[in-house]
Each structure stands twice: as structure tokens, then as C-alpha cells.
Amino acid sequence: MVWRYEDRAGFFSAYRAGVQRLPNGNTLIAESDAGRIFEVTPEKEIVWDYYHPFLAQRGVGGTQGLHVYRATRYSETQVENVLAAWADDPVVAVASPNHIHKVAYGAALQMYRDGLRG
Image (tube, rainbow, N blue to C red; front, top):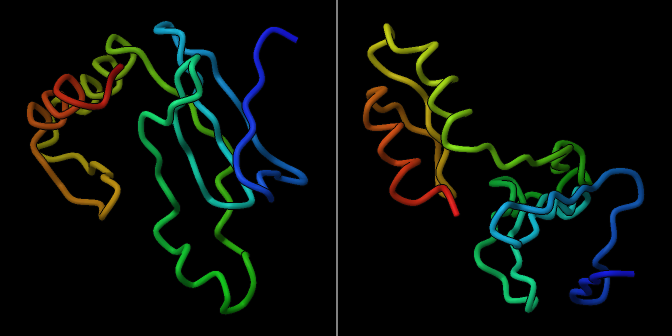
């Protein structure tokens, strides 16, 4: 085993989960059953984490709809290509940890450049 990451008790997803080694050496982890996506350094420091926005409703009706199937970190070029396909649209939807909002194409690209890459 080259590298291993252990989190709190219960860090487990029975059916879905995933990891992606990033170019900067960090690892992107999708913990499906908890509705969580996070990035961790080789030293096991959490860089950022995201919880599905309906996590607070977990006790109501079980966990249906809470799961995160997969997470993938895209390169700046890949993001530019996707956004370029929408260049004629005045706005695109951008998700942040707190909500989804509409921004102009150029603003979406700048948001990615400013803080969503690593």
C-alpha cells in the first residue's frame, strides 16, 4: 500500500465512493453515503470539504437523495472548454457550498481561476 487515509469512525460507503489523485499530489475523495466530497493532502490535512446541501434532512425519510455518486476534478482547460460551449449564453449556473446562482460566463471562468483549482 502506497498511501492510506482514515477518517472518523463510520468513514465508509457501502455501495458508492471514489477517489482521484490530483496533479498537485492531493487526493479528491467522494464519501457517497455521507454526501461528502473533500480534498486531502499527502500529509492527510483536509484542504476543503463539501457536504450535500440536504444533509440536515438526513433524519427525515432516511438518506434517499443524499448520496454523492462521484466527484471529478477537472483541469482549467477542461473547464474552459465546457464554459466556451456556453459562451453565447448570458449566464451559467455555478454551485457554491451554500447555494446555486447564475453568473455571467466570464465571471464563472474567473471564479474557477480564483479559487476552484488547486
